Length: 144
Image (cartoon, rainbow, N blue to C red; front, side, top):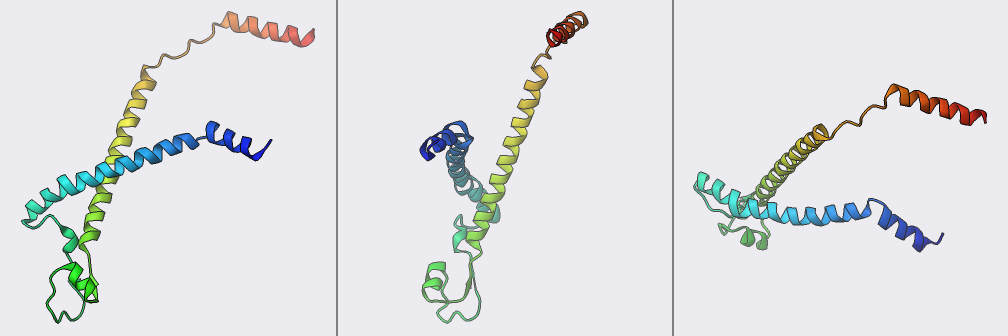
């Protein structure tokens, strides 16, 4: 079997297509969560804290700040030693929300699977006389 045929068989029959679909949907889902954090959650948190929505400018200057720079970009351009924690907080909140949403999604999917499993009819047991006849048939095939 040629390598191209093997790859074709792997790509079509394996879980590669499922994985590709999962990655694509995951990327789109990530954009939805980013928007949820940026456009909905962070403004609410900002309103509660009474501050600005843009946390990316939250930073501390470690050491001297001779020009009293107040923006992150200006401090970075000046080469100051800074502890930029605002962007990290945004990404951390984003991760926690994503993890929470995925947890809820898995929980809902598990509940749906349990309901489907409970609703699926049990296969009927084979009656004893039919089972006995099948065993006799199999024994006769072995002998003859």
